[in-house]
Image 1 (tube, helix red, strand yellow):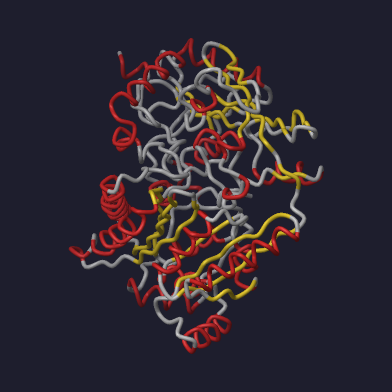
Image 2 (cartoon, helix red, strand yellow; image 1 turned 180 degrees about the horizontal axis):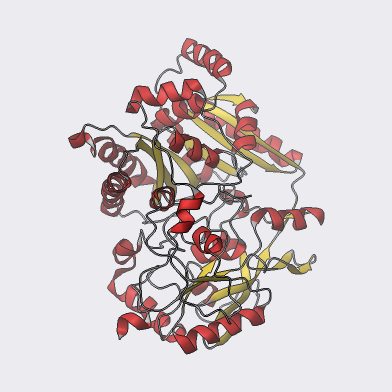
Length: 538
């Protein structure tokens, strides 16, 4: 069963090793262990539904509670303290496209506000209901999870939008294919959610981001079904698909998608290398990309993330041995870890391994083979479970990300780490903050920052600490002209900053499209664009 107030399945845990707790307490101080509210008590706070009983909508309190929030840190604080405030009034589980049409007509006629719901993995508030006079209906697409067509000649697959990553890969793998889209939320996130938020997978350098994989499909709108036919390429005006990518449920509900699939690779391996410092390693990563070497992933951690990742792994003997060996050959406290993927046929991968290895060595790097890469691959979808263990030990964890040109990556990284390290000094609290390059491009890279701080006995104080950290880091990103979101979307948390990236004309263009496709402002109000819901207009 899936956790109602944290990440993942109840049966899966990622225990915090004793040595890891000591490591965190050395940086942050002892964590305050605070019991969470029980499920029974949380259910008692759910108010009565505003839907009448004759509608075919699930109004049970458990369903409404588990669809009230996503996976952001503010969501966790609300869920675990019982301070949720707003709940959906009911959950609809459509089983076919026609059900979506019925729900849209119902919403249009009555002013019911609708929130499309994929896997509930949003970390920026995409699925959170807002206060208002009209009922809120969450539309859970999980039953729209079928393969509709597989064109093996064209390598195109058509799926219903509610299919999850594991469901899709199981179907494709059985036929010898893969989509190759592996975000960290892969275990629960859905195809429609990936499209609606412009998701990026861990091996997007090889397979492409979701906008590269999304070839066409259907969106259910107030005006009817928007059909997006599949063409290998087209010069017939602006691409409508680009309007749906990143639309976050404001323009309609994605019902099906055609995606470009790949043959399963003959060979795949994840390798590791150490560098003496961040500068030499990031220069090597940039040169690997700009040389066009056929790798599938490049993930480069700064020195503190390298140290912390190893410390939290629980493999104390291996880490101790590696630390002694690396120090002996002068890869000391500033060492940084690169994990890179090799995907394809064996000949291609041998060539890539040789070329990448030579370039790594030319920057003073040390390739170490596949042991660390195997550890990373084994835990890449397990590591989010560590958030549960950290929370229970008294520590809050959050992440933020951006993408910038190579010329701006170093300066932005330095400034974000600096402001986060110092932001809570006035209350005598420390922040453990580190970063890595998570996705790379010819012209730049995505910077992914993780930060931890101590929880307090007051949920609102913990939330205020998060707000202070999030706001100051976001301002640094804006000052460096980075994107406010490389892969997490906009939702509620990033919406105030969207105008900085789109500009006044760009925002007015999006709002004009929104007014046409959702004239009464009933679709996912407040996300991406300002709330125009009917009860607020009256």
